[in-house]
Length: 94
Image (cartoon, rainbow, N blue to C red):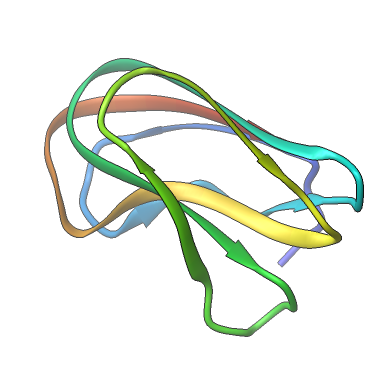
């Protein structure tokens, strides 16, 4: 796992996520969602590399998402069983 500070991806499948993005303390994890898609996107956070990610929030429409970082790793995508159709264009940055 690299320490990216930004990832941009189109996701069009269940059980698919962006790359992990490292968000330093006192920074926001910002996700921008565009595209034509149906499903539920899940934002996840992992405090240490290799630990089980925690679900933080979900989104079912386009828009912007902000969450406070704290020296941890973040990603967003469709969990298994939560994708229906289309493609979500995602940008996540810390």
